[in-house]
Length: 57
Image (cartoon, rainbow, N blue to C red; front, side, top):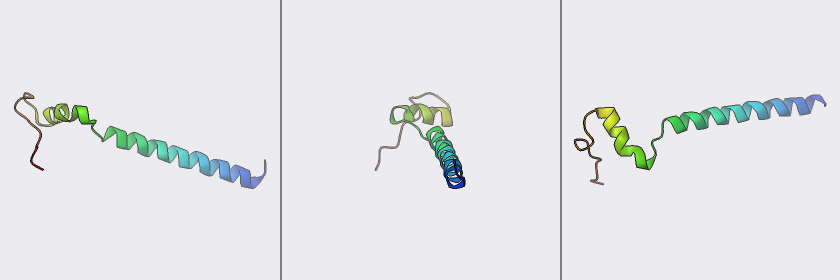
């Protein structure tokens, strides 16, 4: 394996690692549409009937 192939392979590995880390970070900070009500209850506390999503668009 020549020097250019080694460099290309390392760049590919580093790029892939960065993309995976960013994807995991975005997934952890995103709430699925079916969990939005649960997320608000967790954030504000209380009963799910007390905290309702804002439907005034």
